[in-house]
Length: 373
Image 1 (spheres, helix red, strand yellow):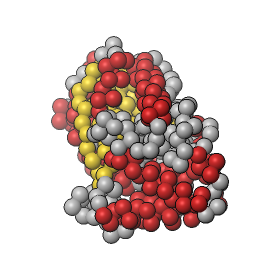
Image 2 (tube, one colour; image 1 turned 60 degrees about the horizontal axis):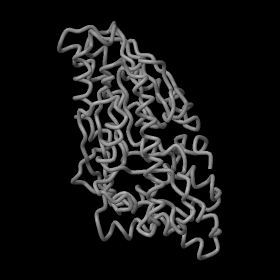
Image 3 (cartoon, helix red, strand yellow; image 1 turned 180 degrees about the horizontal axis):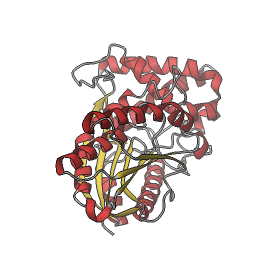
Image 4 (cartoon, helix red, strand yellow; image 1 turned 135 degrees about the vertical axis):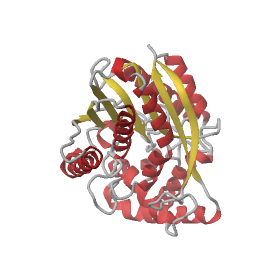
């Protein structure tokens, strides 16, 4: 599997697209807004020394859909409010939207960005009058963030949400992970070790690259799907994939999928604990940690207002579509497109059975970093 080519969300605006099935990810971005705001405020305190009239922001793993510009919109709004409160001249904003080459950049620049610019223009006019404008320049940057993407010391702020748990490749040495598609309770210790070592290599490389691209005093806000437990095979991070593996194993037992096909498929993801994230940051040495927090979002919360007390009646349907939007390109590349409808029908049934008996949650690890060297 060539990860660079197939690791992307479902594009377009169709029923199974990421654009129409990413409320969960939007909720996570909303939940981290206080940390993002504190980070932008801290960055603003160095505005005179660092910005020189221009602010360069990168969103890494931007995907394609309503969330693509959601965090950027929040960051720009916070900066506008800070400048207004302090009578500071607004900087020019240079925004870099990064994802792997398979991402649907056409939808971003063809339909999402024009609407976003129009909304931003209306916001500026309502605040500063009919003639007010906000110089804001957008650039698409296709490529892996496990390598250099930007010029030396050219960025002030980096944001990334629900992207860094994806690895640069399926870890080597997973041959003994039969019947599983990820780390699981039945996975041999060497499989868990292989996943962790791949995470260490990838996250260290990410920090090294970003350390070169950020100015001294620049900031990063990173949100990863993670776990609280020290056990990398714990249910809190692996159960969502175990249920998909159950559906795949059912299809193997019925002759719909070859067993060898299943045994050779593994998800290129690692959900770290806060401790594991902290260790890699401290080991790499380019950043200090301003904030490291853990939060949770229930599998069954998909309401548009993000009220944690309101639970969707069709939670398993929404979650199955969300996971399909995320994982389908990987699955199609390995198993073929013809089994997808049947697979996700079975997966939905597994989710329904699970969610009727318990209230599982995704665990988020959020870290705010400052470039120090």
